[in-house]
Every structure is written in C-alpha cells, then in structure tokens.
Figure 1: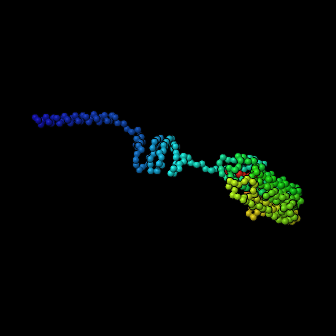
Figure 2 (figure 1 turned 30 degrees about the horizontal axis):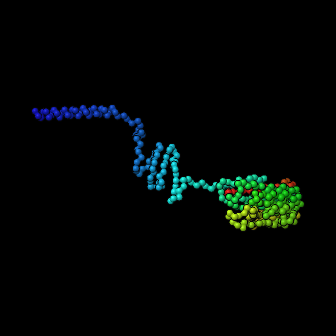
Length: 362
C-alpha cells in the first residue's frame, strides 16, 4: 500500500513539473522577438572602460577632472562638443612661469613709397626699421647716357621715429636732344636720409652723367662728370658707415650715407667705343658711352650710349633699376625704377627713372 502511494505521488510531481515547464516555455516564446538587423548591427555599444583596445566616443563627453600619465599638474576642464575639441581656461607652465596663450609671431611690415612721394605710417609692432632710398636717374642725351641715382640706407630704432614720416621721391631727368639731359632729383625720407640723383648725359657728344653719391651727380661735360672727351667713365664712389652702432638708442637721425655708388660716364662722339665706369669696387654704377659702349653696373644703373650703328646696353643694378639701352634712332630707352639712368639717342635721349623708398620694420 505504501509503495503504491509513493508511486502515485512521484507521478503527480512529474506531471506538475511538466505543466510548469510547458507554461514557462510558452511565455518565453511569446515574449521573444527576432533582431531587427543582422548581428552585430544594433548591438548595444560597449561602455568606455579600461583596456588595451582603442575606443571612440561619437557623442559629447564632459570630464570635470583629467588625470593621466601625460597630463599637466593643473586640472583642465575639457569639453569635446561636436567635431572640434576645445580646452577652456588653458594654461601651460614650466615651473612657475605660465602662459595662457601662444605668443603671436613678429610679422614684417614693408611699405614702398613711389614717385612723387607719400607718407610712411609707423606700424604697431616692430623694433628696427630699415630705410632704403634711391635718387632719380639722369636723362640721356645724344651721345651719352645719364648717371644712375645714388642709393642710401639706414637702420634705426622704430621707437625713435615719428608716427608718420613724409617721403619725397626724386624725379627722373628728362632726355635731351644734343643738349644735356636733365639731372635726377633727390629723394628724402623726412630729415633722416637723402639719396641724390644722377647727372644728365652731356650734349654735343660730351660724356655721360655721373651717378649720385654724397651729392647730385654732375652732368656730362662738366667738372667731375667722368668720361669727357672720350675717356672711359671714371668711378665716383662713397662707402661710409655710421660712427656708432645703428641700433643704439643714442644715435642721431641725421642723414649719413651708408652705401652710395656713383656712375661713371660715356665717351666723346669721335672716340669710338668706351664703357661707363664702375661706381664702387663691388656694385659699380655708370652712365653709358657712345658708339655702342655700355653703362657700368650699379646700385642705380646708368644708361647705355647710342652708337653710329648700334646702341650700348644700360648698366645693370644690384638693388636699383637698370639703365636704359642706347639707340641709334628714335628716343633712347628710359631707365628702370628705381633710379636707372636714361639711354642715349639723338632724338632725344631716354628719360631717367624716378627713385623710390622701401621701409621695412621687423
């Protein structure tokens, strides 16, 4: 009897367990839904955690404290919003010396003043100002070219200059028809610096104009014009430096010729080919010659002379304008800016080029 009771009880338990399992499985089946995309699409993203794998956060993240192996000692508040990271209240320190912004770079300010002149305005930033000026070139005549305009430069403390300085640019000399070409004009930068013009070419086959130096170049065919009566253009040159360092505060602003090259000149009509002389041993400078002679190389080149069959080439220039080439007919070629002398021709000579000033502050 006892055995039968035990057997019935065991069977009843099995039936109840089967019913419970059937109900549970039915409930789970009803609650289950298939994924909306092929795995791993729509999987739940992994959280930011510690690990050796790199991670990317596509939305914003805010951290009140950042402490890491490569972080600075002070705590930084960083907000990575949108696509551009930004740091609020930045500060970079070496010891107790801290900066909150990168220093701005020292931009160079360059102002060029052309003929007939203008006003230089002092820039807001800069320590030194370099002033470079050229005088006007002399005009050519029937036989010889004009002298190149002189070159002058000076470097001063920017703080010593006025807020604005007026510059007057020397004009180029006019060409002559068998009479002397016009002299080039003087260029001045306030009362600080002057650059003198070249002399005009001589008329009636005289020599070419002398280049500007400590004073205006002499016209061709006059005292110190160089190249009178067929002689090769002789040099006139001045290289004189300031007696004190140009950047010390005590320097006066008087005009001092620091570099000035003057042109030699061309030869006489009947003397054949002669070339313009050099203004100094490095840069040269000169008016042209007759009969195909060439102007000497110069800081402000002289014009080339006209020849019976060919015209001479204008002198080249290291810093300034080229001298105009000479011609056998028609108007001689003009000099190039700044300060190139005019080329020779008998109908008439070419015009000299005006000077200019370049002022660089850094």
